[in-house]
Length: 291
Ligand code: NAP
Image (cartoon, rainbow, N blue to C red; front, side, top):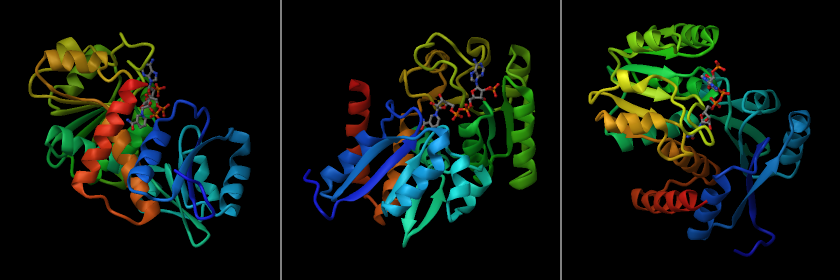
């Protein structure tokens, strides 16, 4: 691709940022669709966040992604946020609209698109267990509640955080949530009548690939749908056990992919066809697996 005077700049701010897979996806899309844009990673320390946002605004970039640790703090430097980003309290995508910076959260949509596509199920009327109560858990819990989950239970190591997220869902979206710890019996009792189990913790992520957030062997069965938002490794210990027990088992690569597609479509005001999305996903999976 030739960079010239009309090249649009998009990118991602975070700290660290070297591990990000987003440049692979966005630059591939621009190349394959002949869109004159380049996606650049920017390592921005917490102390430099305000300066970075001023700079991006001043340089009139088309938009950018925001990742850890800036997803919450960035909101105060933007001109406004979408209703979903407000509910989640975090922004992962910013779009420049005539010099105004608008924040969105595409994590929930990315998760939902991947979940529906890869499991063939929806949340409506289902009982859902969410393991973890951090940033990703909040985006997913908000989405699952908005999508009509019947009951939700938040399981977390730090129980106060599980309670806080559960109360937040009940007070702001729908009165469907409860909470518990992740110790074996608490988790087992809470998960007993759930059809959908989502791991949003980092337990099992590379390099601690032998770890599992719950005692899956004695909890899972062939009626469960298990979604682990981790994608490195592609098959976590939780997903290995889920498969062995006959559950539907899906990893987090699709969530990462679809949140990116969603952001790109927003920045460029375009909508990709199903065929294009399939082509991008095939490339993305291959590229990520080769790294
Ligand atoms: P976060 O806000 O820091 O939350 C981390 C969560 O993991 C908390 O609930 C924390 O529990 C729990 N946790 C961490 N270490 C634990 C341990 N040893 N035992 C039990 N629980 C533990 O992080 P996040 O942004 O939500 O991200 C969480 C994971 O999701 C990461 O692996 C990240 O890479 C992945 N992720 C994937 C996607 C995707 O697109 N697929 C998107 C976002 C995030 P406490 O509250 O007790 O500390």
